[in-house]
Image 1 (cartoon, rainbow, N blue to C red):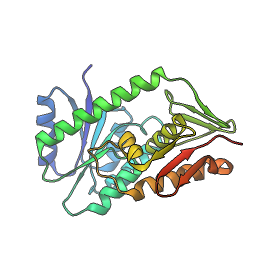
Image 2: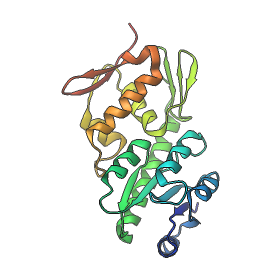
Image 3: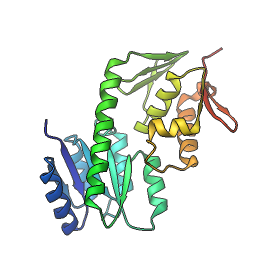
Image 4: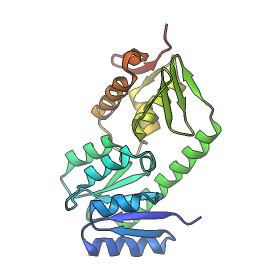
Length: 230
């Protein structure tokens, strides 16, 4: 089935360049020049979004925040297009749940390779999670194929990356998972993610677990462990 990529950038030349090269690779391409239009087109659930950070009205970061709030768009892979020297935006973008970033000027071969990698990982993840059953640890129930989490029978929404971190730890319950293993499993070894990114996700997961926050233990200097309720 032909995959659809949504290209979002306020520079027409860049949009045209990306559209031309993506279509050559067999992708269907939709385009938007601002954040508001991007959010409208995202409702059609494209397979991947190429998103410029610097957009009029809604910035790319704000667009991602809105995407993650909607369960129908929360799990669409996003690659940020960023200007040189915007390391802070890159870090924030990854923390918000973006899958990768490409620095402008865009290298087309590099971009196409990243897209193929992310789409392949997404397909592998979908295939794997469909084969998985309910993951239950104490009063926490995780449905991998539906991206749903219930805490004490109450459904709690977890954004994509937080969900994946929670699921990975729960699948390895009782075992200490080091930070490197967690980074590689969730973000991949070819994406640079700082330690603070993991800390932020763990903190948010604990907040959502509420009274069960101590299910996620920090093993100082090593990593994390998901334990059952005593």
